[in-house]
Length: 124
Length: 107
Image (cartoon, each protein chain N blue to C red):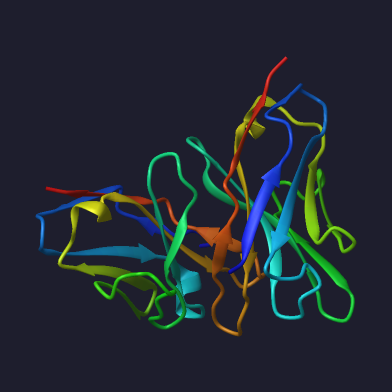
């Protein structure tokens, strides 16, 4: 059974960097069939996909246009985890952040499982 | 458009059937997946692909698709099905999209 365990601070100051980690058990961050995603949820923006990292003979990243200039998602094969860094945060980045595994197929994808979620508040 | 639209709320009598819809251009090319979210919890996958249920999801949940509309049907709704439901798909650029969410109330 695959499980994702998130960690990271719940409070970040404006203009600083939001950093979260997602530890994987029961699968590998280097899997050739999975992708590892960050998703956030807020009352104003709903569920919003932020980006993903995945390995297909080499590492790839895809990022949402809305955050592309500020986001980095990195795998850590030594710890079997992946991380999110979001730079220059503002109060609009306040949200519950989730990590999730994606199993992409030609005409479908699905997120399963999800991490437990981390409420990150951007405030001074 | 690169959006997925859902009705904000629906209600269903206990034991009856409810259909939740999701509309968007991307659904003409990609299957939707569906997620159930209860207050304070992470979303849980209930339907993926053409009409597949993960292990542990009751068979009263089913999915279908036609044109630009995907549907999630709960046949014989139970009290524990009261939750928010979200659809998800991809657009032509490979970006993931989520629906606006539907709150299901079981009466």
